[in-house]
Amino acid sequence: MLSDREIIEGCLKHSRKAQQLLYDKYSRFLLGICLRYASDRAEAEDILQDVFVRVFFNIDEYSGTGSFAGWLRKVAVNTAITNYHRTMKHRYHVDIDEYKSMETGSVSFEEDLFSADELGRVLNELPPGYKMVFNLYAIEGYKHREIAEMMKIDVNTSKSQYSRARAMLREKLSHLRDLRKSYQADSNNEDGE
Image (tube, helix red, strand yellow):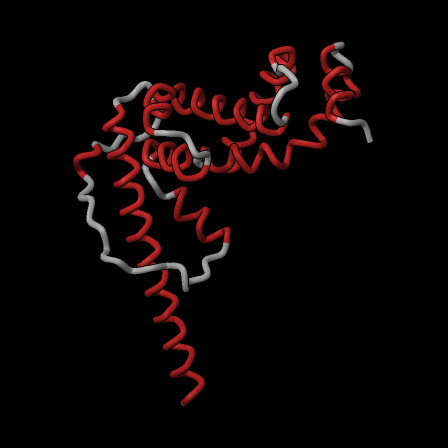
């Protein structure tokens, strides 16, 4: 197996073998990032394809300092943001003021074990802007100022969308927890009959 440095050098020479090695090594990692920003797997795969096109055409921009995986992550996030802007005009638009941001109290979900699929499904139910800001802030670690610049929105809009995304997530996870309790109670009643 070639090192990242050797793969990068091959990609700089437009070696198909090096490009394939890079794809094989990082496609799953990058698809995971794309899935967080896409509305479905097909869209995530389209974003992933764009990510690799950008990587192959701009690999000379990787300075060699810092982690290569970190550079790839940044390319993936920026590509997802570009995709969001490009496709936003085709998505159903919901006015942010239509959502009432209500915290569901101080319920802690730490004791609840939600599967990755359940959490992913709940995240995908968020409106696109909320989902994008939540991912950038909570998962990628960007500051609201950086998010505002990337998404071409006001800093306060970023903060508001993050807050509302958290409230919606709390509400959806609370509902999911209640459904589980109801299901468990029904199962216990059936077993007791």
